Length: 359
Ligand SMILES: NC(=O)C1=CN([C@@H]2O[C@H](COP(=O)(O)OP(=O)(O)OC[C@H]3O[C@@H](n4cnc5c(N)ncnc54)[C@H](O)[C@@H]3O)[C@@H](O)[C@H]2O)C=CC1
Ligand SMILES: CC(C)CC(=O)C(=O)O
Ligand SMILES: [Mg+2]
Image (cartoon, rainbow, N blue to C red; front, side):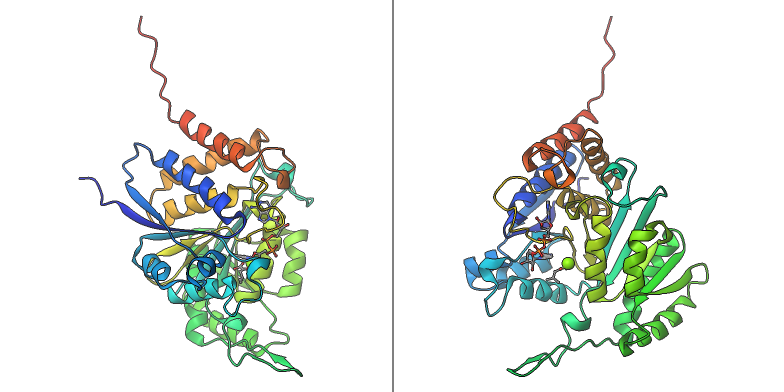
């Protein structure tokens, strides 16, 4: 019996967002063809596109659709056009994360053999780590948040339960990987970081096979460059994870290559590139689609348990990289469309079964 069609909500967003979303959806269509994977994709305005369409970066209809769907694909939001808005596109992003309770943000960083040539760092050891970033609390959500002519105030606040639930995600992941969690914080200064160490230390006692160590965030930023192979799972709070994940992406060769998953205890997960809307290159057809295409692969694995389809996508991306069919951010001359075409062609060629010549 075929499964009911999955409902996927697509949020193209702003600037390069629609360009890379189109690429991601083309690859989704190609990889699922004749693979017993029925789905519908419905696009909704979100971010600046939400402001333009409905005067709201997170229109009610968009949120309702996201909540009712099996998975959400987001490209990217924001840009100078809306920077002065009362509720910016970025506000909409924080709101949808909170509304869907997406407290765990998973940002994988790997320098695969085919990517080695693009990495800007001297490193021979295999690099493969995951940043588990707390995503719905911390200084991005803390109150009071005040601004007067004389001062501005942001608040970083964490509760034990907020720390515990994301720590469990990190330890469960480490259990499935190489049994090593590095908590990144600023515990030599911040009360919230000292609290993180207490709570995470308690969680660690329930995972005796996992080694827990610590790094202050400034030292961690250095280690990501100096010796990234030391990491397996990096656990950290919202702001630090935001900053470190862009840096970690760049050691692979480009910010435009890294996908992410944001998930909670239940409800749909959200998949998006870790980068932004890249207004500086929007409209030129040169945005790297790998981050969005690999976010589609993460969705197939984690929301639909179709690792087979995800593996086909990732192999096709590696093939495009290995043959240097890449966009300018990776030193290539291909357009977004040309790279996407190459990925799709590689997917289709991987499925052609050669019938022996009948004699
Ligand atoms: N999740 C989201 O939607 C995010 C949104 N933003 C928003 O994006 C807007 C631009 O922010 P920026 O600081 O410029 O960060 P950005 O991540 O959009 O761009 C940083 C640099 O990386 C390049 N880049 C990013 N993605 C690329 C891709 N796929 N292919 C090739 N090059 C790529 C850009 O051209 C730019 O030079 C802002 O409004 C910001 O708030 C920023 C980060 C995440
Ligand atoms: C609005 C920002 C928090 C988006 C961002 O930089 C991110 O989630 O990486
Ligand atoms: Mg960021």
